Length: 115
Image 1 (cartoon, rainbow, N blue to C red):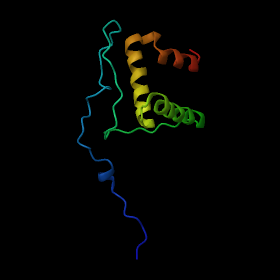
Image 2: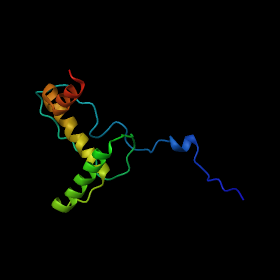
Image 3: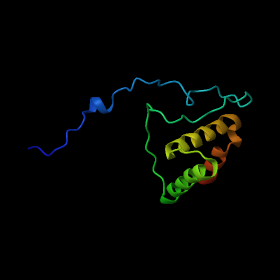
Image 4: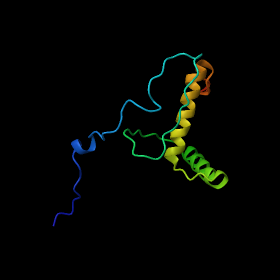
């Protein structure tokens, strides 16, 4: 009896999911800081077509979990960590699009890199 698990091949792992690839909150917008920014939204719980891996510190993971629990306990929002992260990304990207040089992201990254 063979005790090895049957694993999918590369073609199955990297196949297209058939979902949209150039729609949604990540689509490219014109670089016009004076135009009214379209409201960005994180995507709700659904099957997503792309995946990234992000490494965080123990403290960052704990803070994320505390935020998730606070959303549930205080605001009645039962969401997973991925949803919180997608919403946070949408907020930061909307701020960058709207405020450009004065955005929170630019200021924080400049502070971290010392520029």
